[in-house]
Length: 145
Image (cartoon, rainbow, N blue to C red):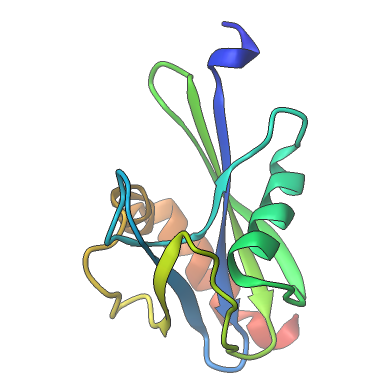
């Protein structure tokens, strides 16, 4: 497979330590228009997943002080042409993001009370027992971080 056929993306599941709630953004238009999802997007050709994540965070919500970042999941499509790297990103407190034109709304939510419709990929990830266990463990030890 040539690198030009690979779509490599990164996303941030941003969590506020003080509230243990997560920041989601509502997409303005396109294939996922109206859906609530992660901060993130397609990595540039010369970027690593980590570099793409950092750029996407700044582009989509402005300059934010991330206290800790934990790789959460790497989804690979059946044909291996699509990769999505999901990171748990911890901030101290909830904040008002500076949204890019890609999004029309934002909110801080408990994982058990997410807005609808949630992006299909995010929904599948959050239903995955392994991801649920990872998130539960991280949330339980937040006060130690």
